[in-house]
Amino acid sequence: MNPAATGRPGAGKNGAGKNGGKTPARAQGATAGDWVSGARLRTLPLAIAPVALGTGAAVVANGNGHWEPVLAVLCLVVALCLQIAVNYANDYSDGIRGTDDHRIGPARLTGSGAAAAKQVLVVSFAFFGLAALSGLAIVLITQQWWLLAVGAAAIAAAWFYTGGKHPYGYYGLGEVFVFVFFGLVATCGTTWVQAGTINTESWLSGIAIGLIACAVLMVNNLRDVAPDTAAGKRTLAVLVGPRAGKVLFCVFLFVPFAIAGFFALFYPLAWLTFFVLLLALPAGIIAATAKTAPELILALKLTSFTALGYGLALGAAFAF
Image 1: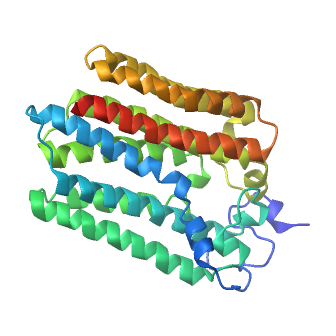
Image 2: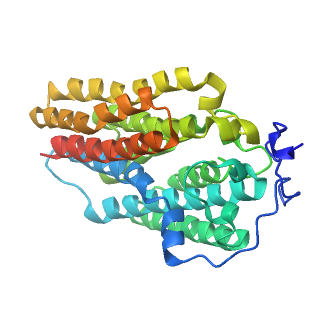
């Protein structure tokens, strides 16, 4: 009997690892392309979009077209580094647990044996460190020392998504993490450090982009329902099942356009956000009718670009 199919999160088919999972295959020597792939570039729009929205909202809050370029760039660096760090951290944690033994999508560095688990862990920590240093620079510039606690919470949440003994991503709470930190915290935090306040534009657009981030995670996990079930990883998609998961995906994806419609009543350029439906509608149709993993991967890519287009379009509407 395959121990990876027993339903235990730590089960793996190659023996026990550090966290009760498998011992990854011996590293074969990852190429530069492997490391770039491991960073999962398709997820980076989820870091860019909230910073664009938060900066646009800061222009509104300041009331004079003013924004802080240096702080905006630092917020972007924090968001990008956290996103890349959590991607490598997930690669490491899922790899040593044996979760990726059942993986359908692109091979991971740790699970495939392309890179040693410790190498992936070090790279993950390096990006966490860059995020922390950029965050510290923001604190020194703004003198808002309480932001250190927010940064620490973001790093801890990123690590314990799949890391630690009881990763909350294995218990259906991944969407909560992305909604809070890649939606509300990233958007509202960007506005706060540039304007010293959080306005309605920031709150509502943070909710919107947080929902799209949830859509990205949901469609990714819909692809992996069968292997995650076998590995004991109880994502929200696993808990509710594929049919309900597809409904939730569409809710996450399209409710933000209702929020954009509300803003269009006050910001004429916000109507341009609806052009992003040219990406969102195909993503929704493909996900709803998908029968194979490649179809869901295509929906994932379209949803990620939807996040980027939404953030840039609505952020620009606020700023101009």
